[in-house]
Amino acid sequence: MADGAVEPQRKVSGMLRAAALGMAALLAACSTGPRIIPEVERPPVVEAPRERPVIRPIAPGLPQDAERHRVALLVPLTGPNAGVGKSLANATQLAILDTKSDVVRITTYDTAGGAANAASQAIAEGNTLILGPLLAEDAREVAPIARRARVPVLSFSNDTSVAGGGTYLLGYSPTQSIERVVAHARISGISDFAGLIPSGLYGERASTALLRAVEEAGGKVLAMETFDSRPGSMTSAITKLGRVPYQAVLIAGSGGSAVAAVPVIRRSASGRTARILGTELWNTDSGIGANASLNGAWFASVPDSYYRQYATKYRARFGAAPYRMSTMGYDAVLLTIRIARDWRPGDAFPEARLTERDGFSGLDGAFRFGRNGIAERALEVQEVRGGTTATVSPAPANFRGN
Image 1 (cartoon, rainbow, N blue to C red):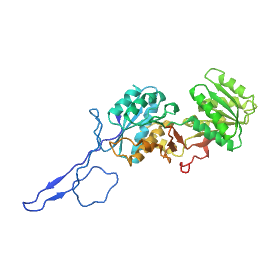
Image 2: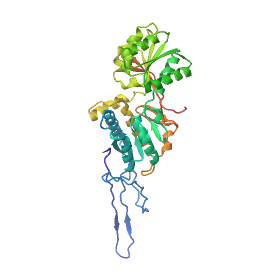
Image 3: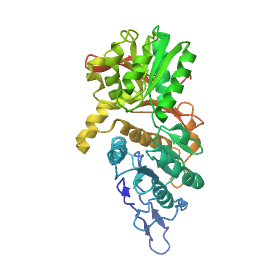
Image 4: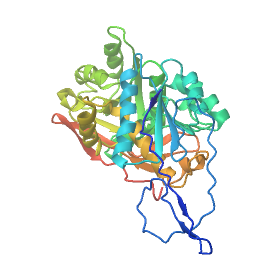
């Protein structure tokens, strides 16, 4: 466990001065605790003692902090996913520093030793909101524990099967990405689509999303083939796709998969002039724009408007480049600080605020949670062009009017 903020010291001073017998008593007011916004000095007044918030029992050694919101961050700090977990943890601290907020204290718990244990400890130590965990299987362990304690969970997973019942997903949805890029292709005059889909759960969800998105946009999916890691599997799938005259093909895999697939696609009659489409996974590859074979390809993702500035600041502070998805940790803190304006320390987190229609905004643009607990994101469409990527269809700035 790592405490993510510095404990402020309370300044308590008071003085009662008694004058000589028969004289009137004078009372001098003392200073209060640290203020966020400076106030105009006022005449001293006598106030009744204020009721202090009730704090859950906590373990020895954890600061008794009644003035700030206790928020737990559940991420892997050891093991194979430690790099992502540490990047998310660093991002939350950067958000605290950038906002100069002293109303939230984030304590980090390592999920590598067991997400259920981390969640139980976080709740026992008085945290009223959980950010994380990262993995869907960890979110499944944490959800019932948090639900019993009525502590909402903002997971970084994109597995929609774990959403609901107090668990909210911040992860980037492949379904939304596919819907966005298909809609852009359709209004650009493309009506005949094909799909090159990786095997596995992600591929299954991507294929379903493609079929639905094309149907809703008024187009047709003429062919869809799956591939796996076996030698020749991708080439065989592309050969089968070439039997129909499609105008665009969605490669629902990583940027690496697309780089391997496109030269083969271009050798077929159908794929010679086809528009290549990608998913949100491409945005996790910082070098995607440098692949000349992908020139002209489109993919939908969260906006990159603020990411480069964030990455520069992150690198300067932590001495390494951030993981692309670490911005979710930063934005989770922004959300928490915004809600904290009307959330009294010691009270339960106001969960109803999470599903407000106007949503929230952050480094990754506008987003809002549906009643199902899944984050709806305002996505942009980018095009690979001349060694970089360029926005060809900007993301909406907010959800007002929708």
